[in-house]
Length: 220
Image (tube, rainbow, N blue to C red; front, side, top):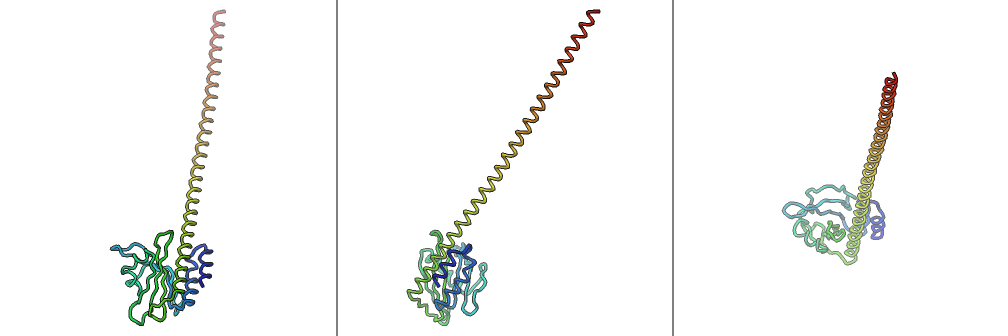
């Protein structure tokens, strides 16, 4: 399941498109009843706001992700958890009554910044997670962080390329307009010179005619 997750996350164009498939593989393999990925965002009163990105449940398969909304895990995660996850700590919780599933929460870091977490709930409800499971979950969180980092870098590169192309197009348009303006100025200058030459020629012919007329008058 970890190998499948690595292949999916590191080859997909968008990690979000394959996250449900990844959780649906790892969840059953780890004998959990639920696996979900949450993004942390700034909230009110310095408390984080949680956005559910992907949610797999054994009884219902992949659930629909969505924006922040009240959820059974929201209050439990909101108390002093953010600081521990930011520090890179893997947190285990006993949620609700003894009949509720135990939970393990693994932080996701993207380019050394805390992004959110991936969490798993087990059917035993006692929060006992062995080292093999913890290692697998840490590996998944690491791959998620790497996939998000790679995608962010690609999106930033595409955006930078589009910005550069737009600037090149705009600059080319400006240069073309400058060239057209220069050509128009040269054409107008040439036309003005031609008019001046014509006027000079006409003025010269008038002067010659005047002199000729004066000469003829004197002969009389």
